[in-house]
Amino acid sequence: MLDLAIIGGGPAGLSAGLYATRGGLKEVVMFEKGMPGGQITSSSELENYPGVAEVKSGFDFMIPWQEQCFRFGLKHEMKEVKRVERKDKHFVVIFNDDSSVEAKSVIVATGGSPKRSGINGEDTYWGKGVSSCATCDGFFYKNKEVAVLGGGDTALEESIHLAKICSKVTLIHRRNEFRASPVTVERLKKESKIEVLTPYEITEICGDNSGVNGLKIKNLENGNQSELSIAGIFVLIGYNINNSVLQQTDGSMLCEVNQYGNAKVNLKMETNVPGLFIAGDLREDSPKQVVCAASDGAIAALSVLEYIEHTK
Ligand SMILES: Cc1cc2nc3c(=O)[nH]c(=O)nc-3n(C[C@H](O)[C@H](O)[C@H](O)COP(=O)(O)OP(=O)(O)OC[C@H]3O[C@@H](n4cnc5c(N)ncnc54)[C@H](O)[C@@H]3O)c2cc1C
Image (cartoon, rainbow, N blue to C red; front, side):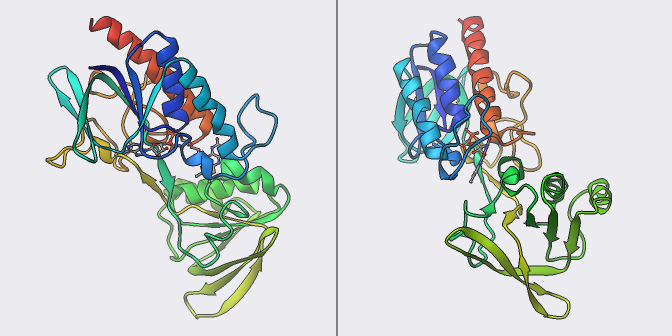
């Protein structure tokens, strides 16, 4: 039986692996369905990880993380986990091919991914002017004009954040009403640098070799089409949570989750199920940043060490 099964090999899973193996756990395996590194490997530039002054691609940034973990004895298996079940006082990790392994403790760090809009040009310019994270990329557009697509809390809050950095923010939403909370809508209205276009849709994201330079937009009330000159577009229309491994055969979830599907944890990354820990973007209220996911992973692993010691 494994001491610890880590599911997901992004910043949270790798950081958990480092702390668990350096903390003395012998049988620690990280199950990752693809190459380790997580969603940040799709980013062309990462410049906000403290202590790393050099701007690197997410892929290059994550390579030493794996090397460091494997040096301390973390084992990695390229396997997709279908489900985690509780059995007596331990866990069964079931894979897509229906094979399984038992573990005394589990850290689920399967993260998620931002939803894409499917608008023409989005894939072409993803990472070259199209972004899903204002905290990550807002600074690249200092004193430039940008647009935000979306109508929920994240879109409005990120617009307010961007208005403090950019010269102008155009918020585009296909309905007249926002899904965001009334308090956030009121805060948005006070921002003089934000222009709101509703009900509008983006029909194309335009650009050239250096990236995005404009949008084609359509007024959904009168059908009028126009163009907007911007340096970047933030697509903030939602987030896919990778929580399927927590889903049981009867449809219930292995641990408590909130209305969005994010797992509820305390400050030790403990769920309501003893021995089950969640780290990174999957947890409730995650700031969805590499540094935060790494911190979650370290905390979860330290909690596992304590848990294993107490249940001996
Ligand atoms: C384009 C882009 C740019 C970003 N830029 C920045 C930035 O500049 N700065 C910053 O701090 N953050 C940035 N982020 C956010 C950052 O990448 C995430 O906050 C961070 O990666 C979350 O780490 P995680 O380990 O929780 O999850 P993830 O990175 O999502 O890793 C989860 C891993 O679990 C694996 N997995 C999922 N399901 C299963 C399963 N069933 N079985 C096995 N494996 C599974 C996935 O393959 C993945 O490798 C960016 C994100 C994106 C998409």
